[in-house]
Length: 326
Figure (cartoon, rainbow, N blue to C red):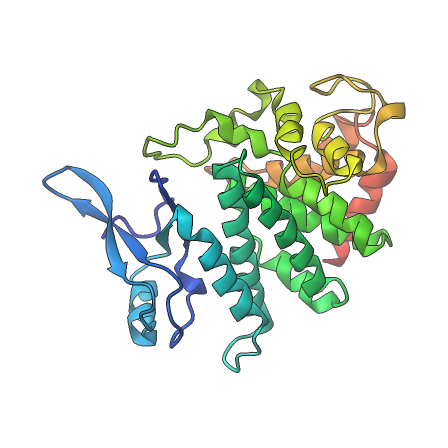
């Protein structure tokens, strides 16, 4: 096997997922692959591990996890089947699963959806599945404080584009609930945050194996037109409201006109766009990246000082109160 606990690599045609989310004694929804070092090739590659329809042996799974294996891989075309498996298992009251474990399944299911969409941002069907995923997420947690808080607690802090997008979505939905928004309003904000960086995958060469999955976020500021391209990708979905597209386009704009891509000023920025700016900044700067992440209080202080005129300080103060409750 490849190095245990290492950051997962990207392989063309495949997407990784957490091994912990497989449920013993259930049937695999798709073929599963593991990473292995092939000595004669001098590099790692994926090898078949289990076939679709095979039962998952609990002892085998425990042994792999104890050895430090954290991720496995599925073919990109199998992502929707994997997502449905994870979502359905998260909704079943399994006696041996805690609330947190069920929320981990829900979280991983949503990660499958954002990966599927971002790998093919021109595929309207996959974008529509993403919208449905966000709607189902809110349906699952909106009326249950424990479920919402538990879902926020299982968020991972890997600094990659998929995790960042999902974390922003979840933070946005929960913050909207804190503000007293209706579920329909919160859903629009959550969809916008789910897809706000959709166009950053444009720079990914899907024919290459990637050692580093942090590439897009590291180059975000050098691609100042990705909000417009993200909006354009989403515009093929007729069911999305103009508010969603506006929030996606303006999530890097500052109140004082110093943001990008259009240097829009305060009187042209909606409340949703102002919230998206706050959440995108906070999640990005508090996510782990080779030990360079800011402590939450430092990120919040920067939002109050460096961005005193760029961010809506009333919303920043309310966001701080929200974080104190979760």
